[in-house]
Length: 497
Ligand SMILES: *[C@@H]1O[C@H](CO)[C@@H](O)[C@H](O)[C@H]1NC(C)=O
Ligand SMILES: *[C@@H]1O[C@H](CO)[C@@H](O)[C@H](O)[C@H]1NC(C)=O
Ligand SMILES: *[C@@H]1O[C@H](CO)[C@@H](O)[C@H](O)[C@H]1NC(C)=O
Image (cartoon, rainbow, N blue to C red; front, side):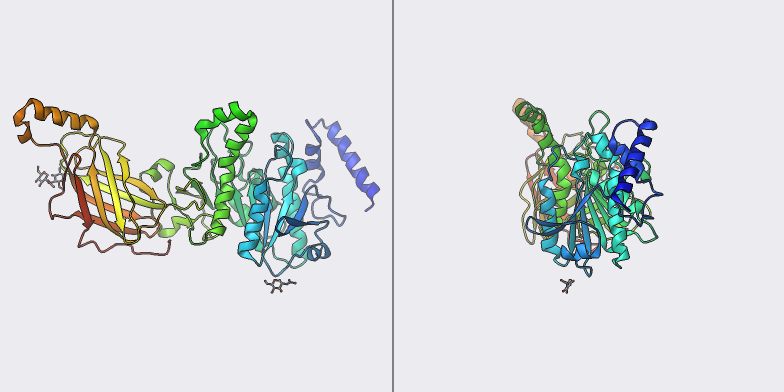
């Protein structure tokens, strides 16, 4: 097919677009030019609006001028090895963001025998957001075309793992749905898939579990403003991870957003927004870099249930590893998984669920507790806990504690009831005003049972008071609890370290 013919074709479609008064711009026309019927039947050269670069090392990439074997081999593509395709998102300044090369080089360095292709669709991404969104199908189609060509070279598409950030996540999804034949892409990872114009859309109009054999997503910035969130809130994968609840990330400081804007103008906003949005990328990089610090996430109905610590269960694939080393167990429905992270790399935190039962509590008291744990490896230091509600009779409280170190097997627990300031004052006044007040019963807590479950080891430890039956704790008194002698740790499963 001659160049003239292509130009004619473009010209015709241009007029068609004009004639049909499709609102807007060329990007829309491009979408309609490459309609599905035209696609992949073409013996003629496929016109790709996307540039593909094979990552070599350091900052070096090799641009593929065609998806043909000679171009691929010239760039060092090794067909015995798996392929990772990285796709960026919407671009404000038209520049490739620095995380792209960082992710590419981390992948290459840690997985060694691997091909890494960077998708450059900056010319289409550097547009107003809605226009960039309209181009996502076009870019998805370009990637599908690349994979189709690889398939013709006997390279199976299930060896491909697409990693897309923000709009790039949906692009990867479209690549999967445009692919012909029954064979699917091996894996798609959506890094904080974009929310606006995708939230609530049908699975065909966004990243969804049927776009690849296995789909995972990490949601890091779903904080809602005026009905919109930067990252998509709904589950779009087989496993959807919501670190720190998914709406915002520690160390990204939303409180200061207005100060940032005052100081840097919109750039301040951009920095703050990017922090939480881009955290998804750095969590993924972390999973490749820190092999001994893999983060576990747990299935839960929502974040508030997770904060109560009731979700640290790994039976029946209820938990999974965040990032590259996920267990690729496919399930019918999307699973929402939660975890807490540190504000910096390595992000891993250890999750502990506490259950404390208070017995025969007659006065309703405002509980403020200090607990410290000693394990075979480390000590936790003082953990201050304020229970959300007043303690009332025979109630069991559960809450989540996270630590940045592995304590080993839990041996001892120190428990101190701070009481409320009010209580202490009342008690002191009672004693000064009424001298015989001392014979009145001092306010005390009776602790029925304390048990701690470590999410990472799935081990539950019960604690008993040191001096046998005395489980009463008075205000400000420190009480030591040790492993109950009858407590053979249940559910000893060390699989999820
Ligand atoms: C391709 O990678 C394999 C390892 O997976 C290696 O043994 C082989 O030598 C590589 N081929 C080329 C041409 O580099
Ligand atoms: C709680 O109160 C009941 C009855 O009032 C008593 O039998 C029981 O021993 C008390 N339990 C504790 C742990 O103090
Ligand atoms: C609270 O629990 C204790 C010990 O388990 C029991 O003796 C007591 O009757 C319970 N009190 C109420 C009001 O349920």
